[in-house]
Amino acid sequence: MSALAKFFLYKGVEVSGYDRSKTEITLLLSNLGSHIIYHDDISSIKDIESVDLVVFTPAISSNNVQLNHFKKTNIPVHKRAYILGEITKSYQTIAVAGTHGKTTTSSIVAHLLHQNNCGGVSFIGGICTNYNSNILLQEGQNAVVEADEYDRSFLQLHPSAIILTSMDPDHLDIYGDEESVTEGFKLFVDLLKNEDRLYVQEDLKNQFPTALTYGYQTSSTLFVYDVRLKEGYYIFNVNYKGVVYENFEFHLPGRHNLLNAAGAILSCLEWGVSFEKLKSALANFNGVKRRFEIHHNDGQRVYVDDYAHHPNEIKVLYEGLREFYPDYKLIGVFQPHLYSRTRDFLMEFQSVLSEFDTLFVMPIYPAREMPIEGVNAEVLLEGIEMDQKSLLVREEDLSYGIKTRRKVCCFYYRSW
Image (cartoon, rainbow, N blue to C red; front, side, top):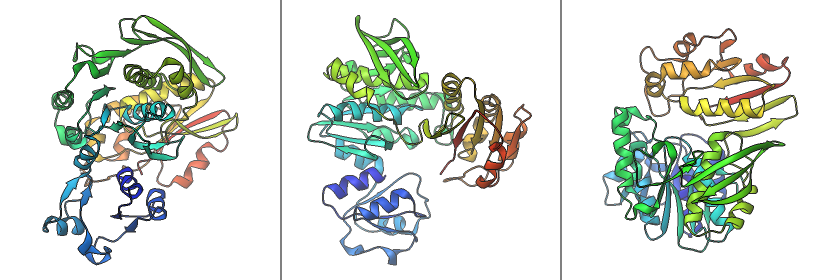
């Protein structure tokens, strides 16, 4: 949502907004000239008579006083996804979709295009570290959009090309079951007018047999091979339609992030960007905030912040931590996000979290949901088979649990 606000501000449009509390993002928007209010009442809105458009996210409460007021007026009121689609439909849009990996992949694509002066506009679901922003603006007709499956928002977009990273079940509070999740992604893919511009992770080949694929298998259109870990980063080779490109450099840990990079490389090669330009740009990509973000590393303790809120995301994060820090004790600090997700994937969460050497679990962050009876952090923790596990009620208690340990790598996920 903040990327849209920045877009309008950069275009000289007056922007006002509401949030429940002050954050780094709202303070930044205020500094850019936006009027942000933190009380849900009409009287707080500046120049309410001059409002031309109201944009909201599906996460906003149906009881929101301001939103319900505007719905009763003649002022256009639209979801974020619709406005994003309206802005980008005049561009050649690369839309990045998938249950996991879309923020990192869209950030890499945006960076690769931006570094080669063909970026146009990019709307990203996270803060790209190179630019400290979730929106990139350049002259040009290309756009990069993170296509969110929640609430089927991505069906409002107008993609010229699609990168599909994964289709694992999630948001079952919206979709109901795994089959409906898959159907939602297929409806999104059907929006493509040119099926040659569908790029899917190789595990999805059977679902989309005509798509170009990327991954590690030699049967893929583009595959990564000869991966080497060198001084804290990857060196790897790429085979693209039988042509070999050697010695790519990539600084994000985790084989899942290598897959994200492969999807970005494939799309940009298909988009006409040269190998040498891609290689140079990828080497200086610094990642995305809260995606394997290293906050501290003194050789003895490493603190990693990651937005892994699904069991499969925690699994690949754990594998990346083990690969990069094989001699370290791994401590997980996890706050479940949503009661419904915790309920729907309870056993999967318990299985993957049990792999850590020590685990702290925080109370569930409800976001848009009301509590569900019998679903809480205690129930999650009880089913995890390990000795060193604790309920962490206060973040400040964390230091006690790790202060005496040496060679520690601490994965930290908070939901806010």
